[in-house]
Image (cartoon, rainbow, N blue to C red; front, side, top):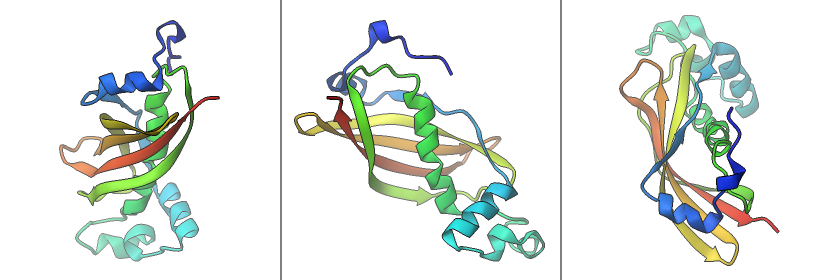
Length: 161
């Protein structure tokens, strides 16, 4: 990870100049069977297509696949990858506000690497020091033209101090 250039740091209000632009692309993240199994344990979703390689091999998927919500949950770490390269001097806490138009577009086979591509769609100052960011996300699987999922992610960002 390259550290941001704090000499050229922007402020939250400056994000409005980036609307419509790609903020960045995350590194690749592996969704292997171990991660899928751990997610199944946390969510208590042990459907065969996720955790039983023998049974899953007999399905249209031909093997185990990641939970759609596992792929979705990875957008948090993917966004951290992207934000780490942005220098925003007054950015404080950010919280998840939800998703609009979330679609799971393709299965993710166990052992596949995924990454996120983030485009800033809008920035709305809800009240002084509080910004609602609309970010279009496309999660890609390595070696595939078709995205895994697409969504507009809403985040509340609070100014420091």
